[in-house]
Each structure stands twice: as C-alpha cells, then as structure tokens.
Amino acid sequence: MLCISLAGWLTTARAAEPSLVTPPKPYGPVPTERQLRWHEMEFYGFLHFTVNTFTDKEWGYGDEKEAVFNPTDFDADQIVKAAKAAGMKGLILTAKHHDGFCLWPSQYTEHSVKNSPWRNGKGDVVKEISQACRRHGLRFGVYLSPWDRNHADYARPEYLTYYRNQLRELLTNYGDIFTVWFDGANGGDGFYGGAKEKRNIDNTTYYDWENTRKIVRELMPLAVMFSDAGPDMRWVGNERGIAGDPCWATLNAANRYPGGTSDGLNSGERPGTDWIPAECDVSIRPGWFYHAKEDTRVKTPAQLLDIYYQSVGRGADLNLNLPPDRRGQIHENDIASLREFRRILDATFAKDLARGAKLTASNTRGGAKQFAPKNLLDHKRDTYWSTDDNVTTPELVLDLGKPTTFNVISLREYLPLGQRIEAFALDQWKDGGWVEFAQGTSIGNRRLVRGTSVTTEKVRLRINQAAACPALSEIGLYAEPSSTPVTEPRSPK
Image: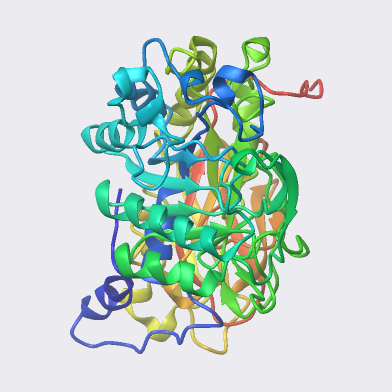
C-alpha cells in the first residue's frame, strides 16, 4: 500500500510539469503525517485476550489469580495470519484490560504473565504478537487500559506514575507501534490490591492526559492515539462499527476528554476545529472476549460486508475485534466468516470498470495537466483533479464506451487539502438523458456508494456543494460478484 509523507503528498504534483499552476490552498483542518499513514490503513484488527478469556467474563474484577491465564496452544502466527488473510493492515493487542493483568512481564507489577504457568512464566504475549506482525507485514498497536481494577494505588497520584512507567515499557521494548489505544473507562468497583471497594476519579483531570500523551509523542512520534476525544482519531460513538452519514473527519476538540460526551462523535462536526477522523470498533462476536457459547454467533460475511461499507465506505477506519480462544488461536468459525468476507471484497475490487474511460470535466484548474481528470483513474492518492478557485460545483462525465454494469462507486478526496466536498450526486445516461441514481454528502478518505446494479455507457458526477474548489483523487466503478450474500432479501425484480 502506498504510504507517502504529508510533504510528499503536497510536493509530488508540483513537480509534474515545468509550467506549474498554483495548487489550491488547504481548507480547514488538515491531517498530520501520522494521520495520513493511519488513513491509508483503512482496516485493522483488535485482539481482546486476557484472564477474561479463561473466566468467561467481559470485564474482570481485578482479583483473578495469575494462574488463570494459561492458553493451551498459543500461536501468534496463526492469529496474525488470520488477520492478514482477512485484509487487515495491523493488529491492536489489549496489553492490559481493566482487570489490570499484563500480557507482558512488566517490571512494575506481579500481576502479569510472568507469574502464570503459561510458558513456565517466561512468556510474553506482546512480544510474540508484535514479532508475528512484523514477520507477516502487519503493523502493531497496543491498548493500555487507564482503569486498573487490580492496582492498590488506582485513583491516587501514585498510580499515574505506574501507568506511565508501563506505557514507556510498551513503547520502548516492542518495536514500531502504529497506535496507542486509550478508552474512557474510569473507575468503579474493583479488587484494588485487596481493598475491594469502589473508587471514583475526576476523569477530566486525574490522568493528566496532556503529559501522558507527551510520552507517546516522545517515544513513538508516528503513532496515532485513539480515544473518544482523539487527539489523532476518535471513537465513532457506538460499538457496532457504524459511522454516521455524513461522517466528517473534523471535530471540535476543545473541552473533550476520554470518557466525556459522545455528542458529535458519530457524524463529526462541520467545519470543525481539528482533524480527528473516526475509528469504527466492533467485535466479530457479540462479546469482546472469547466465549464458547458464542461460537455459533459469529457475524456472517454479509454482516461484515455491511459494516465495511458503513465504516470504511464512510471515510472511517474499521477496527474489527478477533478474540483468541482458550487455545490462544482464532476460532475456526471466525476464520471461515472472514475468509468469505475477504473473497467477496477481493472479487468486488479486482477490476475497476472505470479504467480506460474517457473523462470530461466542466472545469480543470488552470487547464493544467497536473490537475487533469485523468488523475482520478491512476489509483494514486497523491494526484488529483481540481478546479479553479471560483468553481465549486463542477461536473465530471465518464464515457465508458459500452454498456457497463456496476453497483459500487468509490470516491476519494485529496486529504492534505482538507475535506472540501459537502454534497455530490451520481447520474447514469439512460434513454437519451441523465437520471440520478445516488447522492451523498461527506467523502473524505473514501466514500463507497453501494446500491442496486446500474448498467449504462456514461456516468456523471456532480459536485452540488463544496466549501472550496474540489480536490478529488479517485473515482472507481466496481461490481460485486452475483453470489454476494445479503443480510436482507433483495426486492424481487
């Protein structure tokens, strides 16, 4: 997958020809280099794995014995291969969940794998998964729960030192980290070193997030940080994997913090003061941790496809949870569903039916080749079609040369210039005239318009509203295989 720095995105087009036309000025907030790298991933996975896997719980109380954690046949390569075969670009491991049990031999606690029978106390799940990710070409990320139901000092100042020490361990001992995932869970009943009491915190101040985040920026500058407040990507506001429509990449960050309000998270805020795009997190099963009783409740390929189109297809990234079972492997039922889901996606996007089309635009910026419509078909994120500054509602026609059948349209904006397009429509040429068959609002990193099949010789894209002259880097036409399963029966023709 193409990965290019922000500077590269901005300069590549400028070197395209001797006589240059000035590129459009950025509009509103724009992504950082680390965010661009994250946007290109689009699809990655979560691994929820800890003592809960063996106690059949979703949230551990914090009093679980270390001996409980004892996978019978842990296989990091099997886990990572399953994720890669599904098309994931990375994996995030729950290095420590709310129960406080650490999947690495942390020097700051006894509540970790070093005191479990697994690998005779010499095991390190974080190490094995991170190394397997590197062997198979996936990026690796960590989840470190701010809440700790085991630690005696939770809710006291001393715990923050403990938490930051563990964050440093994870960011210095396991190679490149693409993301650090912080959630908003922030106190309640717990074991707390034997106190067995309820502890509350002021989640607006207790974690001192500004200084905690500085550790990530210092040790892993390109790592993106997640929480419902960002700063790099935000929670989408639900655990169903569904982004809003629209789903703007911008948000007003002021007065937000992990565990705070969910207002605006699902759809973003327009125009917004900060570039904080959405991540859609969802589990392939009803629960986040493995439970044998859910072996028959794995999401179907059709359900996974629907989630994909309503997350990645709305400009967000999809974070799909794959919980390892008590062996320490991904269950066969999960793999079977993932395999068919991936087969359908690969078959859908194997051929861009727009390739080779003749493109005609109502306006091209300065008439320059560097902003020509042909850039929309080269599948490169760093080239784009744009218009003169005063042209914010242009049209583009694709002449396909023959009747062509498709049901998925892919659009991308050139992100370094911000999110500019606010409304668009798509028309087909039918019976000697244009007939609208789809419309939408936000585009951002990617917009996938999925509907009933259209057969036509020509397609027209109309930009109906834009905050600044459009900068569009891709348009593609695709057809799902005819055998694609659906979650709802199609209407009879």
